[in-house]
Image (cartoon, rainbow, N blue to C red; front, side):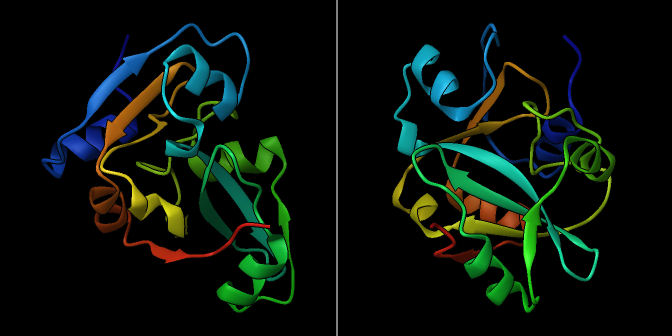
Length: 154
């Protein structure tokens, strides 16, 4: 298969990562964690959120937690936040829902990482295609994305 924008960005930045591919029959972190035999709490999902001012942000959440839109809005300095539609997410990232990576997005967005990401030596995160998981250090995720680490869970 071809290299995704996310993989390309990590290679350009000389970030070490491992690729794990799987047959993606079901979207979601739970399925990916199960088929790849990875802990769910160390398998992260990438969510695209629309803020009330019409801007979009990326949220990276562990598979076992839900995002608090209220906490995120407060952190981002917005009055409100909502989950993007699949069409909005694709337009902002260039990726299909179920294959969204925080790396190599089409449009530059602020990135928020759930604080538990820093508890792991290695995390799994989508590489930009359904069925493509990248394993890498959370410190590298934070630095490459210039992300804010915070408690954004419900």
